[in-house]
Length: 224
Length: 299
Image 1 (cartoon, rainbow over the protein chains, first blue to last red):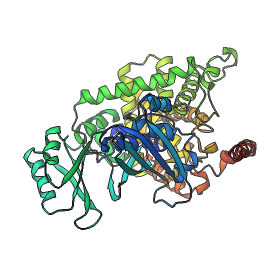
Image 2: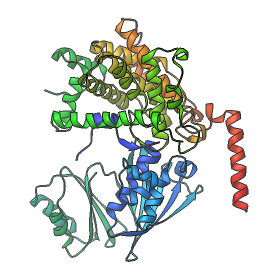
Image 3: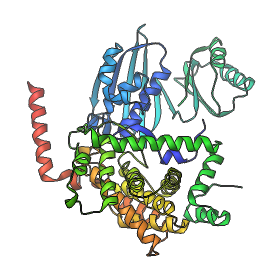
Image 4: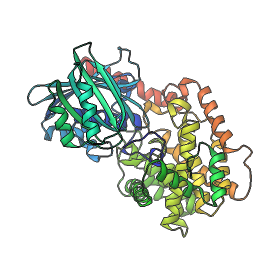
């Protein structure tokens, strides 16, 4: 859903598990978005905390919020409080590293490395920018920038001519209006990520159709 | 018809031209910009009010320690205070209990509605629930109050700040107090102008308030600051309804609050490096704990 104005529920909200919109709610949302981008069942999640996250994460329940997000809990889900027990119940191993040395561009930054039951991994860097709002800044080795406030489709592909044209033609056929479309890549002809933000939700059929294209390796949807 | 507004002046013009309270203009703005139906918005407001009331009620009957361990059980303690010793009168007494309670819910990882932030989440529900408990107020009126508060909070977010890290506690509890003051005036039958007057008074009364959380936690002094935000809202609403003040229009007051916030030293903007956060007695405890942690890590 488009959310480009300050609305009533941005002020009277979000509904969230306390105590901090930036250190708890934002952390949960970054991890929840990571879970949406990750395909398969996660068995291990390693979190590296930077800046202010590194200094005060325990007292703000940032650790529990991050674990909860990886388990698929939204920032208003009270199961976050018992996240360590929930992780054990779901056979999810968790590990926290604190990095107070590395300089990061935003004080509330976290790296999340998720491993699936088939051994494949996903690395996400997220920033909690205040009031529960977040930005995703890295997917594996590719620097990106999106916030999940729209319906978002994340397409992993090879940087080959025609890929983006195919994606946009699929969207046009289904009459999905594009709000933004950004391509991020390692380099010319190498791995790329295209992030499409749309005004309406994207169907599973559309996702499957894009996934059929030969240069496309993954398609993930984020719906807040 | 365009229902969007960018400041108090435009909001009041819409209210006066259409003979509407602030809440009605705000809900029409939300319907227009969010492309939603009135019923959808009202249902969501009701859900948020339900969450607010649980956040108020639970700590009174089931006190819990906070995550950081500095607070817990205060709302219950105050509600057990002997009536002969309760000097504030029923409505203020209830407001204080409610504000403590929401801060406890928040600090123990319970579910709250940020209004406008988690750290200041106690103010608006404290005011609304105490009013409901002590006066003959309909749920419809309370709902209008929440929407009215949303309009004031939106203008402050747009033209000022609601972030303690950016502009101190005056931006968090100060904004919440202004929102609650305006809500009170609309619920009690005041005019849109009086709503904005009340918000301006509430902001000016908390001007310069530092954000200085002990150990960086949303516990001390945040919890009791929420009680003050709630009481300040009652004071400001009563003054505005009587036609006392304000001396500064709300749009100007929002700008002033923002400028003062930016002028606060970094140590007083949520860094836990100044104010109450460096109180010697509490710091002694911090360094003792740090010493223990160091000792443990060496073992």
